[in-house]
Amino acid sequence: MKPFVLWMTGLPCSGKTTIVKDLQKDIPNLAMLDGDELREWFSPKDFSKAGRDEHNKKVAHLAKLLLKHGVPSAVSLVSPYLENRENARKIIDAGDQFAECYVKCSLEECEKRDVKGMYAKARKGEIKGFTGIDDPYEAPEKADLIVDTENESLDDSANKVKDFLKSRNLL
Image (cartoon, rainbow, N blue to C red; front, top):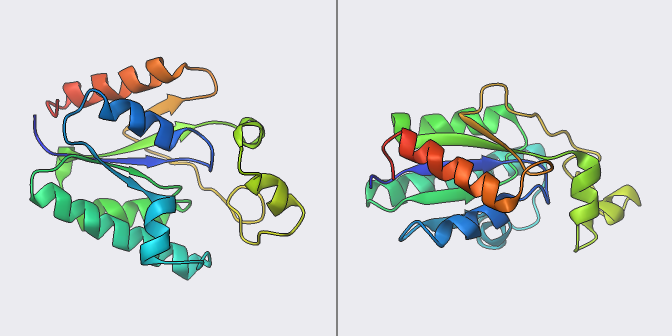
């Protein structure tokens, strides 16, 4: 197995973290870089475009450091802008050891899955700049892999990711 960075992008509640947790069962030493957890330490409460850009860069540098030390990682991060993901690819600079995975799910389905009530708060104006409501999500134009969590089971999505990683000789 070679180390890799799997950059999981998608709307909040699309299933990014759920897939990564499932992958951790089968991929030894897979580090999960969860955007929500890292935000607490790296970029608390700055959801401006500049704040999001900076947060994405910090996470990309952390993923690059893990890769350099031979640790495979899966980044579970909304990464709402095409520019964020392009910058991550450039920062990490790992060729086929970097893959952008679009966790595709409709806004309506993500809202149904939202156990924290974030979407409802955003719709009421209690949360400003929420991705998908009053801040855009730019879906990837050229993702290396797409999983459709609205129409695939968790097992199907996780298996699709593992098959993709095997196709790149990363597993």
